[in-house]
Length: 326
Ligand code: BYC
Image (cartoon, rainbow, N blue to C red; front, side, top):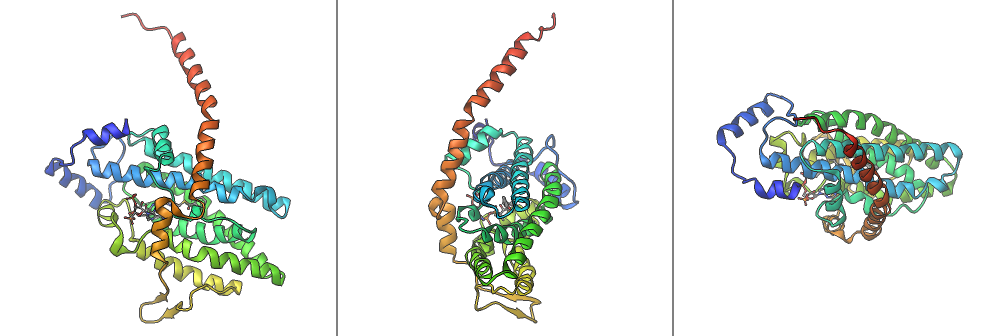
């Protein structure tokens, strides 16, 4: 249905309608599913919300990997709750995308056949328990930095989904920082693990914000439509400014010899990530891309009997409903 919808709609829109639509956006109106919207606006939202939903779902895998190996019962319960929250975020976001005329099945198929992406960060392995701390602190920290402004995004269902997601992400970030505090202030071996996790996750976390503004394909149009509220570089800078003092508090060193406060710009100077690595990862060649997609394909295939059963049950009930007499 989605593919047909995109193919059948011609890109050129009525200029008057486009103008009225832009006026609504500029005035801060929320666009709702039944409202007229340009095809490009709909497509961009489906791409971004779908990618976001997939990220939440695939994002369960690196952390799910540690549920059975959490060091205490309390840590296990907290991690389990966090991973369940990510599943919930995926579901809110799939629902938001569905209001745009794409089904969850279609989105899933596009993930599995690699027509749609998910966040680059989840293609890195989680090697030690300290990685659970680094993910909560850095990955959820970066996610919040990106998602808090999205609570004001122009599409109503997306903005509303973000409100709840951001509340939960804040808890996730705190739990990660709490693990980092324990590790960084623990034994020499624990501190070493915390530093190693920071070393491995720092640049991948910076990549989460997307390519530099000069290479960002969608930012200009997405910002005009308020689908994005900030540029990739603006959010990356805010993230570095927020995180550098937190690393100091932990007594850990951010793996960037160029990191220094710049009084003039009122922010830190820092080294950009290796963009060739970023493009390799988003094009399917990161350390765990194959493994992550294989896990999602297996989950989709294993769940076929549940979908078949639900469909058969729905058909059975529909057949029982008497058709009203003409
Ligand atoms: N990874 O023109 P650009 C979470 C792609 S989940 C992969 O700047 P845009 C969590 C981009 O799609 C966090 N691909 O794009 C979950 C485009 O390619 P296509 C997920 C990326 O969309 C579980 C191309 O590069 N958050 O936090 O304007 C546990 C050019 O980029 C990435 C969201 O999804 C990337 N990092 O800006 C724990 C937030 N970056 O599609 C935590 C919503 C770029 O043309 N999304 N690409 O083939 C956004 O805010 C924006 O989509 C982005 C990218 C800032 C990510």
